[in-house]
Image (cartoon, rainbow, N blue to C red; front, side):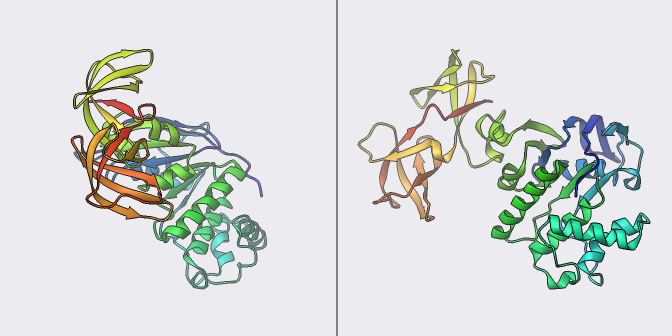
Length: 353
């Protein structure tokens, strides 16, 4: 099974209002053909509204929406070449799996035999060949989600939309199904827009992530960009775990900033940083622990947890409480231990206040 066309998505100055409430503020974005882009952000940030605007389930108050080479701003969902996968699966319980997958094709007046053949092709694509005669109730949650993906794909959309598609699955199954969705998207070269509030999920499946906050875009980038070079304290705190500590940038030279923090000076990589107040972004793996007689920031272990592949600690220091992750050691630290905390200055980052 191959797609006949996959399209780009472009928003030009899109605003969405509900009465006096602004759900989206002047949104400009472009999603390239064949890429999976995730809309990520806290509840109420505008990500689901953006997805519904692409789908045609909501109409823009101002601005223009273009899918492929077609201006779809004023077109309803019926006339847009998009398909959506919902978090609830939305399968018909009285229909077989094959009938569920073929439903959209039959609505479009495709002959039943041809629709059934395409449905079987779609089921094979998502790893459910031979499941066509079963009812949805006879499938696991992960299998039902794959049926929903197959139903969307057989319509050969220009853009595939996925609205929190894994939220009803347990953690282990989520990981498995998201890998399958990513593999299908890449194999077919689908343009896909994926909505989630789960940062790990977004980083695992995305070519790019659009982080939204307060009805606008906070930052766009690859998962590595957002994790390693956040543009603000909000981004640093929202994407992954981060310790944020106040500091002062004294000078910027040669791509590094001289930073004073609690009387000590550090040399930290600097990107778009100027002199003045800032915050140092310390990811849990950027901090190292050693006995208290070693150089570093003094601290006391207030929490220690063994997680099999790693140790997690909370350490009370003059910089505040620091969350630190280390490999498992032969003699790990325990609660109440005095320690010294070292900062890997190459991996630390800065954000301007």
